[in-house]
Picture: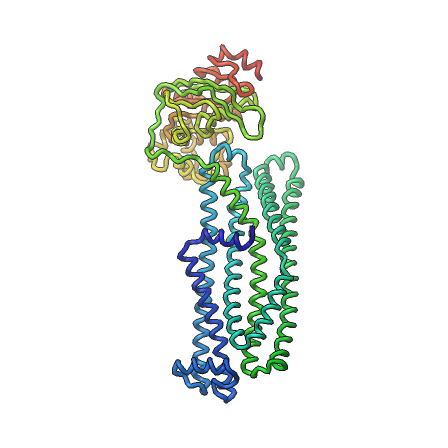
Length: 582
């Protein structure tokens, strides 16, 4: 994709009114530049004592326009006052243009970020689990910001070109042949110094390297405890430093190329300007006033062209980042979930939850994660699911809670088959507690209110009691205790009980505990188990785990092996099958 086409597509994200305002201000800024320079023609003529109309045809034409404004053509002070007023107006327009361009830049970046995050939230779980979360973090935090900065460079490029065009028309009006010759020479110079392919490659390499850096940083921060236990700090540091060094080198190579092209352009511009003055005096015999104005014009025009070329390279360097944002956004939207049903459904499991010949297969894998699974979970009972690692337990949990739609078969609630729309609604009636609980670095109250934003103190207290989480009241700040990143200021058992309390606040129709007690000591497991037993008869519960006490108390135990149901029944009926599978 060409850089200009990419820019047109990026500008499609801009608010129409603000974009129009920026272009209008660009045009006014360019016009004020050209008019201001042309006004120097009669001003210099008046200062020479020859009047505003002396010095050539163009000076005569400008002098007549000045006369139409009612200003004396032979008095420099009124002309000087008009020139100063025009400069002030131009500066005001420049300020307004830069302010509007900065707002436009931030608006576009914000819209891209919001659209990317919204698409990610709306994407199907099947696609999300195959993605690397650090890539999306890099996209929304780094690449989108980079696109915004690149748009700023592109707008500056357009502003430079608009002003350059005004100068060009003014120069052609003064000395057409000389101006056109200079423009042709400058255009050839810009083309010769173009480095589009190299700049595109550097921009693409920077995007990929930054993704690796974010992934390495994310993994390193998540594994700090393991790094310290293994004494692997040096290896972690080496991985991150390798990609950080690569990012630095790529940015340095781009900056070096920009500096080189800038030096070459400035040198060539000086030579062109010298040739320009020589031709004006010796060949075209231009009046001194007009020649001075032309020198001023091209002294401004050539740097503007240089700036436009530099800003164009900045934008080209940004294009790969914009294409990556577009790619990931399009992919997420391709995997978007269907909309929620127009009417909210008050899900209640009255009789049973059933799976009918369910099969799930992940892309890139030959074997199915689940094969011909048929299960019935009676309402208000507890079902335990066991199996070796990779047997399909977590996939089965994802199907039960509506995160994952089966490739074949169906999920039924009280005999009603759930389609894609209904599955999304059903998820709101499911509470899920995993071994790796997710808690915010916030107060206990706010972590609980995530599940029920309008819950009062009595409701929160009841949930804590149901989850055996009364420890909250013994903390120094009670509800308002800030629990640290991922709840690390609490013990593992306290985090699990707090997560269970949050789940119960949802008033779920189905509660899924995925290895929620596997890492707990006996006392904390006993507290969680007691909390679950108190819910028996009131709530449908699915427990994924291997703790014997849980299995013995379950109404039914399902043994999974290689994605199939190997055995099903009470624990004493399936214990032999589970021992053999393990």
